[in-house]
Structures are given as C-alpha cells and as structure tokens.
Length: 227
Image 1 (cartoon, rainbow, N blue to C red):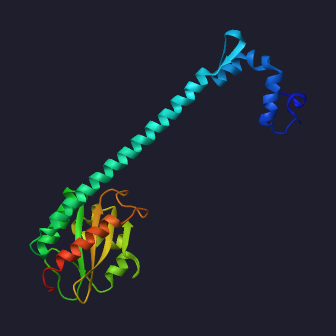
Image 2 (image 1 turned 120 degrees about the vertical axis):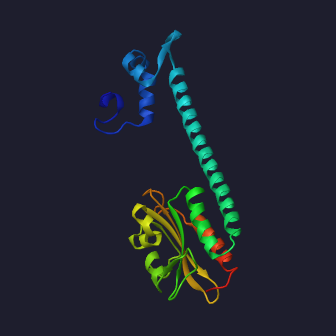
C-alpha cells in the first residue's frame, strides 16, 4: 500500500485508514491468496471472506492457555497440600521427642525422610557444652552464620554454615537456617537444614515453613531444663 492508499509514506498506518482502504478495495484482500493463507482466512461462496479458521485458531490457542494455567494452579495446590501434610507430620514427630538428644535425632530424621534433604541440625551457642546430638557454637556465631544480628533467617548457600553439618558438610550446596531463642534468659540457637541441591534453598525463597518448625523446636526443647 503506497502513500496514495494509506497515508504519507513512512508514517505508521492507522487502523481506521486500513479499514477504509479495504472497504473501498475489497478485491485487494480477496484476490491475494498468499495474504489470505498467512491470515488463516479463505474466500467462501459469494466472495465472502470466511474468518472461521482464524477464529477457531484463536479459540484453540486461548483454550490451550487456559488449560495450561489451570494445570499450573492444580500442581501448585497439590504441592502446597503435600508440604502442609508433611509439615503437620513433622510437628507431631517433634512433639513426641523424649529428651534433647531425641529431639535432635528427630530433626535430622524428618529432614531426610520427610523433606528429602541431606541433614537437619539444632545448634546452640555455649561456652561449655550442649545437649547430646546438638552442635555447639561459640558466642556470636549465630549472628555470623546468619550474616548479621538483625537477621532471623537465611536461605541459600552460606560457606560459614558448612561446619554445622559435620562430615556431611562437603555434600551440602544450599541451606535454610532460622534463629532460635531457647529458655530464660534466652540462649541463641539455630535450626538448620542442608540440601545437596544448589537450588534446594535459594535467597528468594520464603522462610516461613522453616521458621514455623524452629518455633516448634524451641517450645519442645524448653520442656527440659537447660544444662
């Protein structure tokens, strides 16, 4: 379409101008079979342009998008339901602990068998000793691991946290860690989970689930006196 048919050459065509041109020159579209094919159109009886194939193609595409979105929503809902079910089971397991050592064992067990992780650890800052099965940290180490005294949680890979996992530390590629405060006066602790998958825990992930489990561990640990 040149300037005489659609406006000034080089200037963008307005939809209204295109409509006027096609209304004044119906044969332009009707006789251009290549263009009709590209647009998904065909000429039916009576020289009427049939929009059926193009419309059906758009309807099919919209249906496919809707089906994909619905599938994604359903998959997310199933994943959330599964995570909630596993969390509820984990809470019951933790509340059944008989002592500090059993609590630490249960944290590691649920990490591996309920959540498919490499390890779960309870750590506590202490100048002397910690309960059996717990990891002992020096004063201020929780702040160092979490990268600051104001941070309550840290997700992703933290080299300073590898020591929490002992001999399994060489396989850990990502962590989820939440600060704990146990007993009165409060002693600084840490609940940590490790994954062999670098994408198992990433900085952009929410820490709500791990924080919830940390609160359960705190309350359960306080059943028994501090050492």
